[in-house]
Length: 173
Image 1 (cartoon, one colour):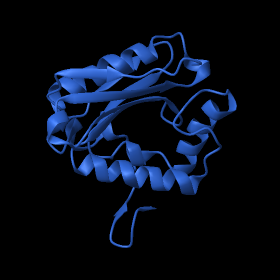
Image 2 (cartoon, one colour; image 1 turned 135 degrees about the vertical axis):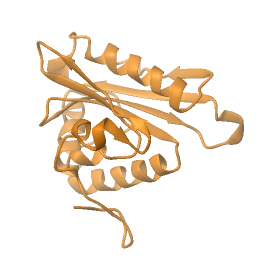
Image 3 (cartoon, rainbow, N blue to C red; image 1 turned 45 degrees about the horizontal axis):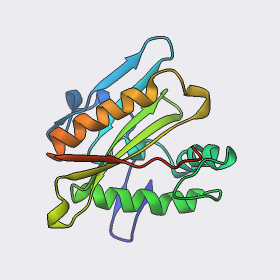
Image 4 (cartoon, rainbow, N blue to C red; image 1 turned 60 degrees about the vertical axis):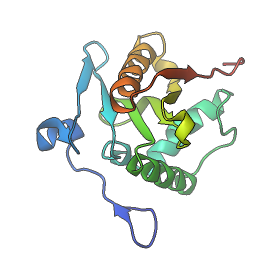
């Protein structure tokens, strides 16, 4: 059970999101894409149902793989389950406001890659969407990042009605 505050809790799903509600979550089609050779599932998440399927410990382990390889992220130090609980709570609140969605690649147990699709809440930037993209080192070169970004672009256009898409890349990466 993930507790974000005294008044809110969010329980992880016991079955994969693609198997619940006939694939419909909060009115949005929850699609699964399977890369046959790697058994990797790539799913869109608009309401946190997939985000919270993974524990804060799993999110910390995912982020820490990038810290270990010296990748440039918004964080440069090891993360803990507690810090990832705070991160998850922030993202769930942003999802409730319609400011962020995720495209997550996973193998049923581990997070493999993530594309965060986010927009600024300022009125003048409602059509501007930014992306954050990451893929575990051992899964790179298989087209997973490409598929995450393609799905992220589709989410930006259809869910956020984006007219300007932006992605920033850190030079050392």
